[in-house]
Length: 312
Image (cartoon, rainbow, N blue to C red):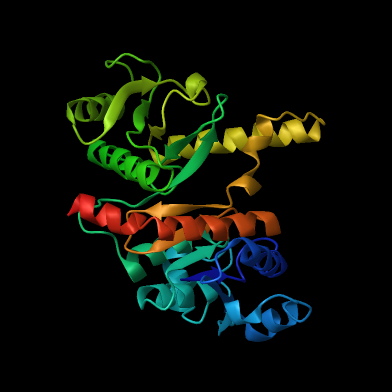
């Protein structure tokens, strides 16, 4: 298996990405190699003191960078020699089995849709985030930013995608799916949530347990929590903000330490034909390591194949 990483993406590139790749090699099986995609001279310089197994590292030259200021839709065609564009070329051609980046999220989404393509039947791909529960489990929230405006059939598909992820990657046999709403009753919410509730309640494809209120998000009530991307992004940004405030106040707690983004590294784009993992822009070497490890587990689980089978 070959996992590609965008060495030039993220706030602390290239050092954090190269250091993270070195750390990941120690935890990945020996038959897994990492393809470093970026400026060859920069990568070679960053590896000059590396004493590990160089045979498991491959360099693919990509001199250009898609920055956070580049327009996501225009960036890839305008910068075909960028690390993100070349990474998707390698993934689409099967030269790598997964592609991970902490760079421009919008460009990663666009590349996923137009370079490796959406799985037939999936209306809109989505991204997820982990919600640590107080009981020691983790819930999955989706979507968290890629689809700000959604229709009921899109939210319904998010429920299916989330359940497939939980079943194949997290090993949860019959994941509980809930709809994020302003009340537990079926009649609560706006037209979107009311209609989505009806669709989910009538479906036999997911284990729908009803509405969940935001105060119960971290109680372990559901394995999968479905919402539109606007709402989901507000939720995770607030959770990140609370964790940051606690750290600044010198408050340490075993439960809240699980909110540290370093623990999770990245999240897959669900609903596209390839294994694409997006990491946090401020990722350090530990987060990058975990992003690469997660890329391996997602690829090994054959999640993309399972989603394709479910939708076709």
